[in-house]
Image 1 (spheres, rainbow, N blue to C red):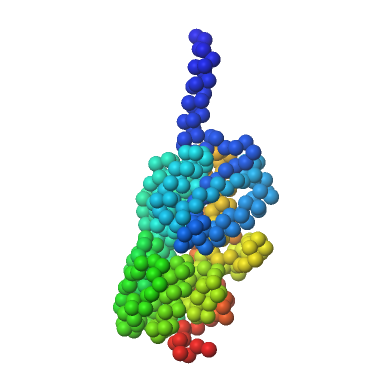
Image 2: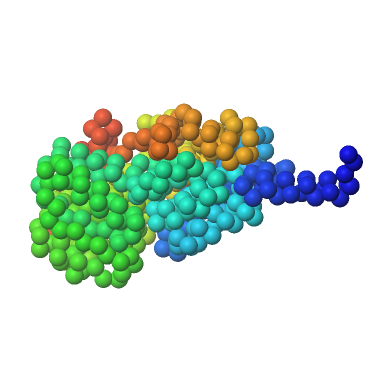
Length: 398
């Protein structure tokens, strides 16, 4: 039976559009496009820029090796403006309009968690470089994969460090009242109590407040040996400056990374001298003993003029993993790419990457201390550059 030409054309167009609506199938013949959602504006913009710089290093490196499926990589950025609803809109735009077969992002746990139902519904894989709240992995979605360690790993690493360094018995937790802060506070409380510590105070705060002195006075009144902060850069800076003003001087100022681990934190763009002696979890440092760490640091420094923090390395690794999976799948179809991510087993500058059944990569957490304005690894002992120094009282600092 001979069908009219217009009917054949209509069927072909329908099939093409149907494939495109699920991501993939409409890649530009000249490049391979990958969607990226991160915060290029808003309170988390500094971290989004770190992401962008890390991705840029990966793009240059991967394209020099032939790109993806023989095409140069093109990243399609969507600025979530540091807002969860914008991150969700980004998924729709990148998948439905740009036909990206995979998405990398976002930065904050709040934004990333909001995206998960959308990528699951659209059946497009999501590689998370940075979101640490463990509840981003609780959906059971087969489309989500996390490169970084989560909040429970942060807490257990910090508690392990403390147990072997002074064994303090009392701890206060100060955290941003968001998914990120709440998850890290819960994880630290659980880990601390299991280790025999007493949590003497828990303080939630609204982000970007100009004045935390009343909160810090309450913490001071409980006389904790340790304070554990879960804060982004702006608040980390304000909290430390005002800790000095109220005389809050625990033996150990510790943190769930993020603002306390940002490259800007020990500089005049952050807390500067107030950052000295603070401890933080870290997922990567230039001196990490993983092949390619130094080379990534060198390339990033050449690109930006400054050394990267771990947020940039996480983004770099996320794109390296995506490229590896797509090349092994030999396909631009989301399902094939997701299957290949599940079987990933490679070494990156961020460390080994291999996902468990839930999509979580097992990643080592380091403990750092700022000494002389520089992040230094102090734990685990096998990886330590220097010995840790208990945080001196503000009045005893030079």
